Length: 445
Image (cartoon, rainbow, N blue to C red; front, top):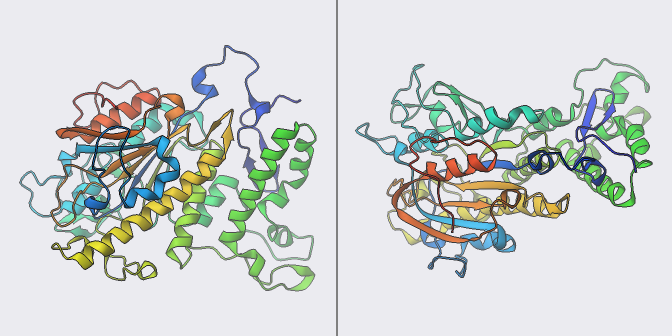
């Protein structure tokens, strides 16, 4: 069996399809470092407006606890699930600055910093934990990090009581004054990952235009067939499964199977691009992009915002048409709390969709989920109180065997969330002494 380099790609006209992990990529020399052999990926996911905590927080501590209603969405992955109670985001508190909890929680969620109250150009926050990780391990992949989300980023404007929109619509901060805008268009992410061409001239059936109408896989089909002849049966099957997944995502993005065909059997207009109108389909495509980025080791550091902080989006498709933000200010209304819990569950179900994907992919004898750590949560606990202690935080994945515990862990009041971030940095090889307002490495279990 031919020995492959980890960075082998399938090439075609304007296309470079990075391969997933194959057995043929195992290092020949046992002197190869474990870190290179078993890369750990880290993903940070934030949901806005807090959580309906009674349906989130387990009643008991330790490994033997009952999953509350919302967390039931992750029941299949319980052995990889850790739920944290007692963690605090002090930087999101007002500290004399008055209203603006949504903007502060968005800005502080991955930085631990207290953002400067301004809606002008003089924004000031702090570097985010994902960017600290990207600085340390980003050179090992094509993209140092990927910033994704369901809503667009803004770098100016007043979005919350005198706070810049930059605070509420960006998770990743390269430094204290430079937020990194997120990508919300799955077709744009797909083309970044696979290099699909997008500008061609008019012509006949053999022109660049005709070539463009093909899938990115069609560009690399000859290279794929050539590679398969050199692989063993197991790797050949893995490659087929991966290429099918890429093709499926591409079809769902472009809906090329529904395009009207013109002369020579080619679509009569270009493949559509943009954000799907149906929220759930949009979110699932973004989860697919995250899964493909991890599967191909295109990056090991990702952030994702389920919505911008303070989001007013409604979810009529699940019986919660009212503004999410307004529902979070429930005033103890049973109806509002029921609808809020529906939204929380809906969001977590999209996360579970990604977890299902990662757990189904084998990478050198472990699942991709085992080789990943995903933090999911909010910088606000109860949206009605706007409190930033006792936050809803969970982590999924085993960090490449560095985390083999699972359970519900309670910590003393005001334990910094940044203690967990410091622990996560250590798992990807960044032995920092501090991050944000951390006081120590979080002890899990």
